[in-house]
Each structure stands twice: as C-alpha cells, then as structure tokens.
Length: 206
Image 1 (tube, rainbow, N blue to C red):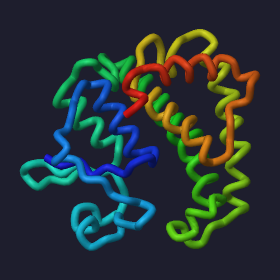
Image 2 (tube, rainbow, N blue to C red):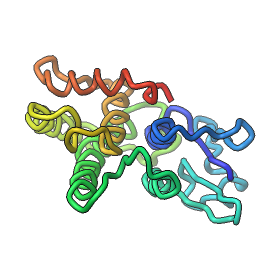
Image 3 (cartoon, one colour):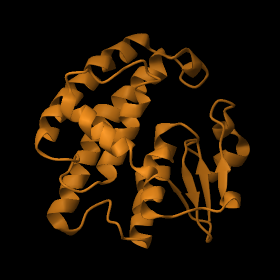
C-alpha cells in the first residue's frame, strides 16, 4: 500500500487528518510526496497512477488505485470503523454527509477558487486564470461562514455533538483561507470558537 501525498494542499491534508484521527500511521516508505509546485502531478509516472493528475491517491497492494480524498477516507472508515468519522446509524450518517457536502460546496470549493484564480503562483496550474471568478467567490465564502456561525451556536461540531469528516473538511477550508488572503470576521464568534477547538486536536497538525 502506498499513499501519494501533496503537502500543504487541502485535499491531501484532509486525508492526513482523517488518518491521524483513526490512529493509522504509514511507514515512511509507503508515503510518496508529490511536489505540486514542481508539477510532479503531471509527470508520466504519477499520471500512470492517477490519470486525473490530482492528489492524493492511494495505491492498494492488489494494484487498485483510489483517488479523491473522501473516497480514500471512506476506504479507511470501512477498514477501521472506530472512531466513526462518517457517523453511525441512518440519521447521524446522513447529517454528517449533508454537512460535509455543505462544507465542500459552499466553503472549500469557493476558497479554492479564490486561491486558484487570484494567486500568482497558480498561473502555471490554472489556465486561464479568471480573476473575476476569484473575486466572485469571496462573498460566497463569507455568506456560508455567516450561515455556519448561526448553526454552530447550539452545538460543538458541524453535524452535532461528535467530531466528524465534516469538521475536517471545514477545518482545512478555513485554514486555506489564509493563503487565499481571507480571514474569518471577528464577529463570527461561534465559527472562531469551533475553529479553535478543532485546531487544538492533535490530528490538526497532520
């Protein structure tokens, strides 16, 4: 088994945090770093692993390749169910899925669009960069954070009382705001309280 990682990028970090929460450690020889700045994801060797040229990717011992961060997390959830990060039972699992999708669609993706279309370093990866699209996504980020602030008023985590994959997705999105030159407004006190709590978990350093 080998995990193809991608450093500070949000999706590889999602997987690393998930693995840390599960207590799963990969030996050094089973993790390969793909340097996105050097465009190693576009190399022939990595393209043979993942033709989509995205990270992360998980190569299983039988040759199966699982790409996409949530798919990789679901694999490890099935392999090691405890602690349950996708929920237990129909209702909890559905709520976690709902909040993970919301965090992806309305926070992580808009933040990523701001970064991809406005950061000078992304010119070699995104062609063409559309500055107007980057700017258009900024208000989307804050609209969702305002909504989330209201939701977090009555519970500690996105989907309820338990930490889940939805919190991991939202955590990497909020942290990625820094490199996108965005910040959580001071008056979003519930989001800030939540972010402080999830950031102090040992897994957040992964």
